[in-house]
Image 1 (cartoon, rainbow, N blue to C red):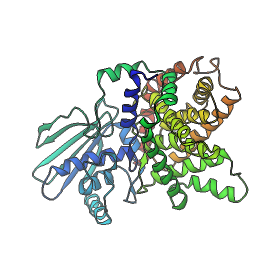
Image 2 (tube, rainbow, N blue to C red):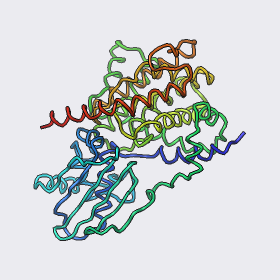
Image 3 (cartoon, rainbow, N blue to C red):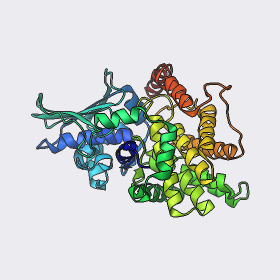
Image 4 (cartoon, rainbow, N blue to C red):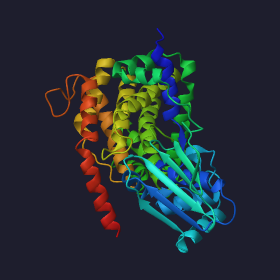
Length: 432
């Protein structure tokens, strides 16, 4: 039953589902800074980062792992001082307290600046590091690890075609992905040989460990801890829904507050990876699903999230956790015994439910949006199993799931671009 599309889907999953330490927007700035600094000798005297408005929005208020600080300036500084230029989205995995102290000294001395760049790229970060005599500038654009160019003293020395950590998609891959449907994703997840998808186990392992960290540490708004505490008080029951909310939001609590544990990301976002993973893992554990069924549910969730997100701008005013939650709804419905029609209905109900959640930057309260998306996924799945769903007569939802997804993406890529600009304007003026 193997189709030519399966190899492409496995390839895409391995590109889009990767470990990431910290919020991926400031991490991409740290990566550009680390690559630039690795090519510069002598003492660092200045770091200047120029980023797209969307990246600025997502980097202003989020914790940077191991630093105890938030924002793009500390990410650029610690990336230049101690970032591993070959580690991709785990660029900050080896930093020490001494490195952080040096980075904070650069900030204190006014040696680091971050500016909004006037660029057409939705995702863009250009970081220039200087020793007072020479400088190196590295530009990352379009995705979190895609190095667009490297300049040394004004001379472009490298224009790579793709990130060293990623293989490029071929025209054949792109052609097949352009024809992808939700039904293709479903068939792939159910029938691809299980030995080809064992790599998805790492998503469960990493995000589960991050979730456990969020429950034992003092992170962010403590959403997961709050749920767990109120189960102990008897105000909540330890049922499937509560456990999904607890375990999913605790992972986001830890990630958004700078925990030194990686998340398995999806589509360039740790929160999207958490949302596509933890509701499925918790449901599988609750139902005592066997290993193969759990793996297929995770593949269905992650690939469906990728399928939906690939129709939207990389960064937008639409919260990415919501689209990842649609993948989770598919995975949960499958675990509950649902068929393709019921999975389609669950996704459509999600679109009818949480399509309006905005992205107002990465920060601790993202864990609340993650928990809302996870809870909506459980709700939509349970409704679908009982034959109840949002129909094509309601709002932006259509009679078939692929059209519903396109309608959602049209909204995100269209009128919500103005919403995005308004959100950034509010945030920047609030910060002044």
